[in-house]
Length: 483
Image 1 (cartoon, helix red, strand yellow):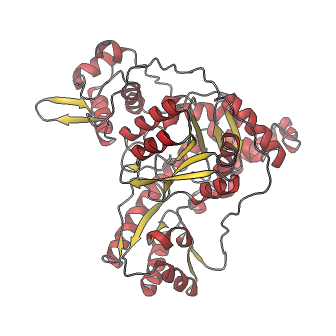
Image 2 (cartoon, one colour):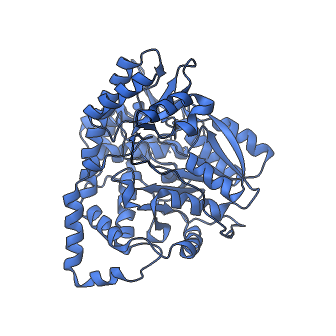
Image 3 (cartoon, rainbow, N blue to C red):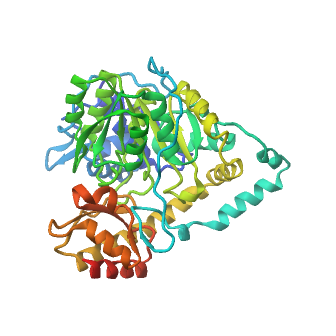
């Protein structure tokens, strides 16, 4: 297919809240991922593409800048712009906007025996968290208005009774629009289960896909909450390395050649805990491996909304269409962990099984809060909250990183994160991080994640989003005294 015909099929929806340049950026990424735009292919000129799509030339310039920032294309002086040759080459596929998906065979529900342990905060000391939002940034008035509007309706009484285990119908309906609009994930209401945070979504997914002694792959280091679930299930766990481009997908392929893998868990946008993003080439290869070896990818996109350097990279699920992927997210990082509202996106048969398990442990969520979130999405309040929070957190990131450089130029090595709510801080080998953790506690400062990452890596996540400038100064002062 020639580029004229290919780009001529791109549709722009000017009614959507997503800017036109991001709609075009995401559309071109999908053409690259699908194999229709091959590595090394020369892109149309900016003026020609602008004329073809009937948009301003500046819009296409922004598209090309964004694509180059995300490493999908490369500009070569005096020659033109080309699809990155570092990407793997795949045969074109006919991806449908609403692909018909089939659940993998052999998926059964495992019995529930107990629940894994979780971290709890100590309110008696200052918390240097691992990356939490600041509840003071929340627009509490908007949340209050949403609740008041619910109670003005005669139908609110229904929310005080038992409701659907799938979650509030208004929230699910609005999430379909929201996730398609912001993340490009093709889904409908039957693909969504509202959960109490993303941790429940991860737990339900793994309970469905894994039996005892069946194999899963995670990154090392990785998210401790997922490791807790896998240990509880009794799964066989394979660890793969994480570098500056995210999970080392080549290691996943080598493991798959010798073992039957059922699940690969990934935090592709901001890997937990290291904050790195999974590169475009590895994203494409991971999807290829899922199709080749028949495993599911559980995509935990816990910090999608907070990306500062460029636009967020589309989730793996946006192209896969929930065939080999399960997508989890929540409003815990967007607004507050206390809301306990997350969501699980998957093939509807998997959702049905997840609902069965959910009914056994938790009949339903919080219908009133869920309805309020649906109203806030409907009114565009969530978008406004995200934009405001993103600006505040970016300023705090910059101040925090400058403070780290000022106070610990030789003690802590880190990279300014492109997104997320925390810095991955590596301490000098001469510093015993576990000793730092204990001494900090004596001064009423809790490096809350140090016990999970410090012992083997001498590194930890230092959250900046929940701290004001003055609080950053205070916390840094205590940490400096300890070190």
